[in-house]
Image (cartoon, rainbow, N blue to C red; front, side, top):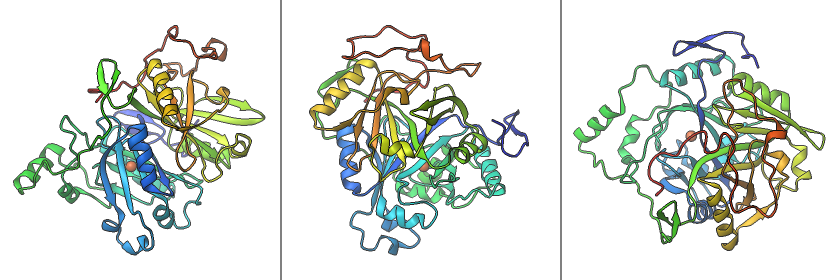
Length: 407
Ligand SMILES: [Fe+2]
């Protein structure tokens, strides 16, 4: 699809339709009715690690927004070394903050995309302003230290473009609280100093560099996952895709393909409904759009425009072990037709306390230089019961690779 302005932008020496290039889905989040229940589900059951709690009473310019709300803390969580790949925030506060900009059934906290540089974030900020795209925030937030702009989609889902996510290292500590001194509420002037110099500055000011938050794991590490003992019989290795129900497919495609520059990989018609799959980089899809009429047909919760959020685990074996483990722990499951997920073979859905679906899977079809997905006739045919082991596809274990130790 053409860029919406017809102009070309020099992005690192390459002419593109947007002044940035989205490289990957970086993080995602849900606003939940009871954030503490959400924490127990996503941390203790699913296995995300908390990288930083954030009490909104301490950070909002007008803390009165929190009046009458019991649980006011949001949780930044991670599965790898990115400071956060998932967040759970209190829905009552988020609904008040959204004002009239997002309907209450937008329970997606954010859909967040990594671009290649701080300059790309800055140029994106100017461009979205020019296009009159509503942006509730810009600059640089802590916790996480990522530089960003928050362009909202036409149906009220907050997207974010960012560069420079804080990396959590071997000691598991996030940055010290004093790092918020390097936060920005506006687009910064360029160039900015590197993180190395920021750390030097904190050290010179006497900041305790080891005073950040460290996740506390309470479950015993009793499962052998690829030769490492972990608290669960699987490792989350990647997040996404995000699946949304949409009111106006054309305007949402103008935004996600025309504005954000995601590529349309494939369209399907399911029960008369047009469903569209878009990608960043080589994954078959990072986001998928489905008509809202499907929500009721599929028997999904009417409280949210999110159909599901994907959680990739490290292997087919881990997927089988994960589903057995989650069933044993009493997780509620849901079946959705496989045709709704082209590019993914074996997968299953688990429901969170608010009714959001998590799609657990292990394989994502990879799209190469010619931009074409695998013909449907060449895809794996799943069978029931699931086999012990699978024959490989040409793109098995392809795509984004998990970095670092599993735990
Ligand atoms: Fe974010």
